[in-house]
Image 1: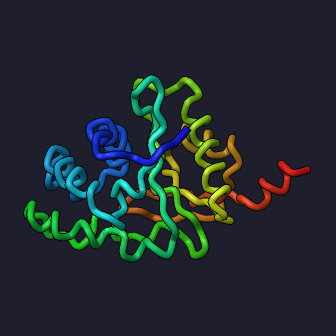
Image 2: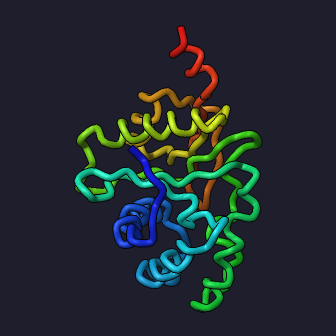
Length: 195
């Protein structure tokens, strides 16, 4: 079951989140280095309305260890979601205007920006169970469409998303990588469950 992230969770969240950053091969991480970027991201956890602020992070615990993380927000928030971090980036000498200049969500979507399973919990079905739990949580909040992007070369992740019911609706580039944009119709699934 997911719960809201707390400041004490930062040291467990960072390595799981950095799995995603490593796969994305973002230029700023190459230029600045993972250690410095970890400091920046960790400082950002305390910022309200920031993409990786604790108010956007949910964690799934197993035996007091964070097994999975889910970071999400509404598409309406996306244009401003990295603004709170700019001051911290400048403090660390990073001159970029954003970590993620590309638009990732489509209008009307609740966007699952990041979903990852900690290495020690991978290949045990935990990711699939956690993702289903996250879907139920978002459905119960009243959202209609949940979306995510998955790298076209990440077959294991795409398999999980297909298995739980996400459908590819398009493609886009984030940085230099091509991603499948996938949606989960929360209203359709709710109607099917009621039958």
